[in-house]
Image (cartoon, rainbow, N blue to C red; front, side, top):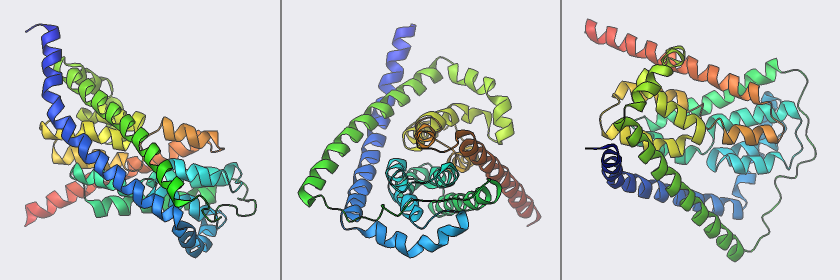
Length: 312
């Protein structure tokens, strides 16, 4: 079989599974985005943020920052950016809230994705939420100065008619579905071709030293790169294909999930947060450090469980 035939056969093999994954991702995405559209239209998120707003003083943030965090938590990083830019935060406060959002954005969708790979949904929610809160507290303690904000403009009532809101949601959802489909198919085909021609093994060898520091198995290098460059949602499609083919063990997947749940999408999302005033190296460094601690903590957990089982 020549090179062209091997490539075509790889694409043919990956298509059925990719179609199933793509349909599942689209169902989750459309359902979550529709629910969030309703929450915005009926002004529910601002009401919730008013309730928890006082807690945000412990992060050096004004109460209005609660809406930014909740928007990111339940919707995505873009919705958080829209709120952050409307409440006039300085570099310090922007860096803190952006770091918290980067740790725990798109919680519903990304938890569903992580659960599909075999992770515990409850554990992922707890780990991501606590990581965001702890990093917010740490940054408030170590960053110089104090956070200040302009008068709250984030909790204004949604004034667009429901019909127009529905049309806007439909248009944006169609664009998102088209983008997701393109990215998911492209990544899965690329990954399968790289595997077929031995390039995945080369990538694993090249990144092995870095993976050792991060506490991750060498065979997760490509998936780690995908999650960092294009995000968890798109990267999960490649992960599911790898898991389905048996190239990753359950232990490998759990370690990778633990890292990327708090540290992913370090191109697009990090760039956006930097553009609105966050300090990129702080947002990146502290999340990488947190991910390393979490992964090595899970390795210790595995070892202790094994020791306990051996004794029993």
